[in-house]
Length: 194
Image 1 (cartoon, rainbow, N blue to C red):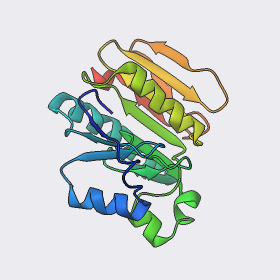
Image 2 (tube, rainbow, N blue to C red):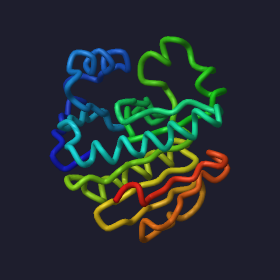
Image 3 (spheres, helix red, strand yellow):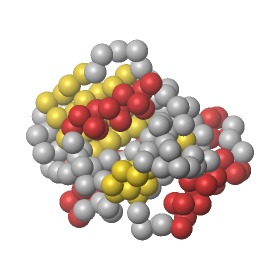
Image 4 (cartoon, rainbow, N blue to C red):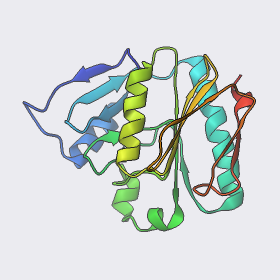
């Protein structure tokens, strides 16, 4: 979530159920809304032009691989997930295996799926605070994400998060990122984010 986000501390007044949060988001479609594990509601402005272009590239590469591999379901930046810790978070791109998706009820698929994706990409925009983004990445991993990338296009740095391992930092966009055993044969061309 970027530094221009508004944080609403509603926990002392009301605790929104997952269904109520979904209804709140439906009633405010122009806003990007997330919920922290403590019940704080975060409201951000829509993504700006350049960041939107980069998000589209990220989702495009994930979509093309997923369409060919047919191993799971890919999500764009408007998809939210209700995590085991109670937070509802929305990554810039996400993926989960078909068996996990098919294990959800129709209602769970229609709303914010109550699970953590196996793979997440977050793109750092000019208004994002690195520390806040890294805390969000730690939250993804704590809730069961197996592989996650935090991409900072400004200084061409990628932070790679793997379950049970220290964070790896990759400098420079000449590198091809690997989906490893989570997304077999997926290679992500960072040069396309320049």
